[in-house]
Structures are given as C-alpha cells and as structure tokens.
Amino acid sequence: MRAAFTEAPPVSSRLPISYQRVPARLRSGLAGILGRMRRRREDRWARFPVWPLDLSADFLADAVGLPASPFARGATPVVLSHDLDSPEGLVNLVRDFLPLEEAARARSTAFVVPCAWPLDHGLLGELRARGHEIGVHGYDHGNRTPFASPPERARRLDGAREFIARYGVAGYRAPSLLRTRELLRDLRGRYRYDSSIPTSGGLFPVPNNGCASARPFVVEGLPELPVSLPRDGSLLFLGHGPGEIARLWIECAETIARSGGVVVLLTHCEARFSGNAKMRAAYREFLDFVRSSDRFAFSTPAGVLEKR
Ligand SMILES: [Zn+2]
Image 1: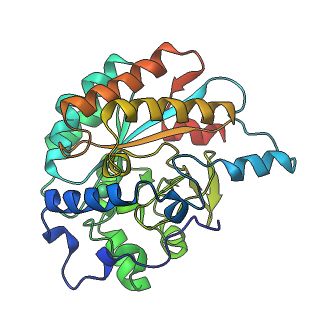
Image 2: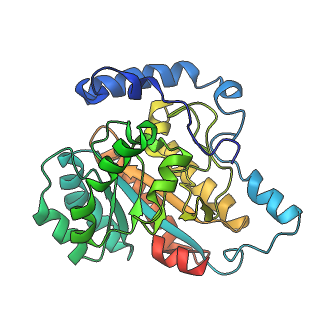
C-alpha cells in the first residue's frame, strides 16, 4: 500500500483546460523526450517499486507465512487488456487485435472511455458477441475523477451507468492509472473489480508508484487485479523497441509465474502505441509464447477472481 495510490494530482489533472486538448501525438512526443532523458535514472523514478517488475510484497507474504497464493500451482493465468482512449482504438482492436487473440484462443477485456467520444455500438456489440469483455475506462479521460470532490466524483462515475448496464460491465480501469483511496471506495458497489494499480508503475503517471504484487488482493472492499506487466506506453516512452518489448513481457511473465502471480498485460490499440505493424508483431510474439507454453493459460478477470 506504500506506493499503491497516486494521491498527488499530476500536472495533467490540474490544468485549467483538459490536457486532452493538446494533440495526442504532441503529448506522446513530449513524453518520449522526457522518457528517454530519464531512462537511465531509474534510481530516482523506480526506487520502489523497482522497474520493470517488483514482486517484493509477494515475497514478503510468502516469507512471513501467509496462505500460499492460489496461483502458485497449475498454469499461470494470463489476462489481456486494452485501454481504448479513442474511436481509433476501438476500430483497430476489432480489425487488427481480435483476430490475433482469437487465433491464439484468447479473449481480452477492452476498457472503454464511456463519456468522451461517440461510441460505435455496432463494434462494441461485436466485441461482446465474439466473447470479449468490456470494461469502463473512467469518464472522459480528463484525469480528474480520482481527485474530484465526492459529489463530483459520484456524478462522473454515474455517467457510465447506462454503459455498464448495456454491456454487462464488471471492471474499472482508471485513465492514466491515476487512483486514490477515495476513488476505489466509490468504485465498490459500482463494479465487481478494479484493475488500475500497476505492479511497477515506473515513471508514469507519477514516479515510484505501484503495489509490488502480481497477485489479486482486496482494497477498500473491492477486488484489485494489478496490471503486472510493464505497459506498452511506458516502454515506448522510455525508448524500447518492439523486439525488446516482447522479450521484456516474456521475461517478466516467467518471473511472475515462478512467484505465483497473475500476468496482466495492458496495451493500447491506437497506432501511436501498439496499433502498428511492428508493435502488433511484438504482441503476437507474446501471444504465441503463451499459447505454446503449458506453464501459462489465457484467462479473464472473472476467471482469475473466482479462483482467488
Ligand atoms: Zn487511457
């Protein structure tokens, strides 16, 4: 819990206008420059949890003799998730990502921003019909909900009600993974699980953030499914190439498997993240690795949480 929350709002949440009015490519470019400048200074931004993976909370749980992880035996579950920040992300997911996942006999969860852009209900319905899950990704991706006053936060969270009912939504993922205790408390009662806390957050959204665990746990009365692999955006911002990213995902997954954790991968389907040929090849390499190994099995958030 020491670094599980991002209690101080980052600059993007404090601007007088929404940070999203700055063009996405420009934001990516700036973050990339910042990331590459800081890549070698992990001692400052990844003191704890360490980057790209820190399982010290799980190590401690085992060392003090807490009950064994239910994931220590049998195949390690692998949960695939996407954050869809734009209409482009949804189009790319259905056209380019679902065929790769379905060929690997996997199903993914797409966290969709419910109140920012015109939703293509045809594509969302198709996602569900093909056996994939839909979750909620904030309100308008304005990075304000976790830090808003209680009535304003309730208003923003309730903005997704219709969407939740329509698509049988169970899970929440906070935009930019910005999360506070107050947010999680308010998610309880609205969702069956949250998946907003990274195992090792690295540099973004704020330095030194994460829960140092790859096992599901309960916080503020709500099951939490930590995002255990380093996410595509953070790795790209730090200047890693697609081949390197695939290797890192596989290495981290193997370490998580040895420690009785759950592998949760977060990718974005926009072209500037994983929605391009080279990054899709890295994603496919990871899918092939999981499918061809008997130490791993594709799962879903519900599948993992019922085993917990
Ligand atoms: Zn997002």
